[in-house]
Image 1 (cartoon, rainbow, N blue to C red):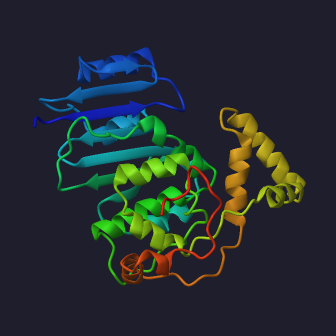
Image 2 (image 1 turned 90 degrees about the vertical axis):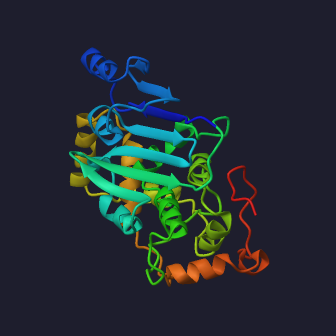
Image 3 (image 1 turned 120 degrees about the vertical axis):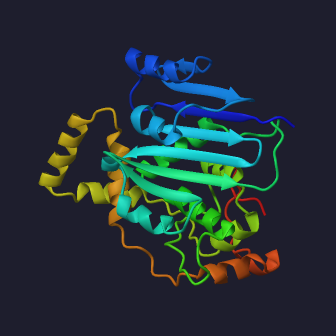
Length: 287
């Protein structure tokens, strides 16, 4: 089996300039380059640039696939549109998931290594399918961060005595993009099902959200309006929803250790599947 690698980068918040596309063309004469995308595959040779630096300078998302078992997803999110302190607890392990600052942005870096080589015809993952994770994070949805932490647990990058981070609601009803992340990173379903035992059903917080907005002080409402005027490209509703979720008091719960979570994942399924099943959904975790 020959070597095969695929690199894809996408610009979301702004298109590339003609000068920037020329700079990228100097790196690769064969790549497909447009104002919003860079794509190239290699069967011999490799990309003559550091993907992390390309992301920091030009792009907002990156996907890498190699048929010897390596996969990587990187998402660059403006720090002003992310609750960084709530994400930090999910990135305390080593290696397979990292959270880094890059100027005015935060970069989430997810890597998966498997020992088995993959045929180049196998599913490489789709960056288009994974891109909604970025918008979900900007709305305060932390499920993809918890999934990244589970991958670190699976890889042995987190000590057995470490206590898990706050378990976000809705792990039994993942979004389509979150399901794509589970598949892309090869997260063990038994481990996910064990983790989901402590995950509450996603409450419909629409009414509470509207009530929170109506109770904002006039000064805060004016501040949000000015925020929308400064950055009209960002939907104000998503920004407000993230702020609302960040201000909610976390549910009191006993967090499990990594060792306890792994032990639970090894028990027979009927003993650990929550007694109250989620509503049927195309995005529900399969049992």
